[in-house]
Length: 256
Image 1 (spheres, one colour):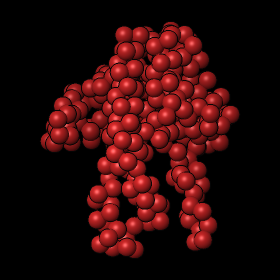
Image 2: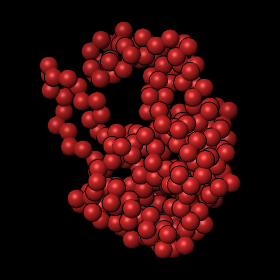
Image 3: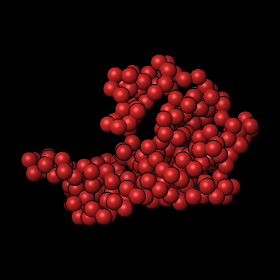
């Protein structure tokens, strides 16, 4: 359920890596896996896009919000209809269903990983970082009913996402609350930084929804890239890549 996928310098390389892996390995157990053409899918011009804030919106800095607003303005100028949470009750329902995505994702993945991590820690007490140990202890303090509640929350979110499929071609949101943070490393004796390499809050929704996402660095904040992600329904990986290709070719990078 975690967030995974290739990082690349261009869409062509991203798709090539992903499709070649999928052609050889298929999907996870019980899943169809990535499907699509052998080369980068053709550009797809969206007609309507759902603008998602997600729980991460409150943590977005002003400059990043301004850059995202510029991207949305370009989309409107290109004739794309934007649907916000206040515009449709099903979009509002989706926003509410993913509003606790960070905690749900952390709860599910930490619970499901705790067995092998406990084995690693028992075999090599110094082999795990203090941050990994803390995560393991939180997982082992969970109850099976708490895990089940997270599974039900994920299921409800997926139903809410499926319900908006006919409203728009995709959803669009930020990929992070702002530029990547500077981090000099943990300091012995000091509290651990909760998210030293950045906050995954904008990645949690797609993880919950099992939804394909393509991120394009369409914003520059203080000279640092900030991504905009386009998210589709399950198995729409190729279509989302086509929309991302259109965005890359049709929109100018917003700077703030």
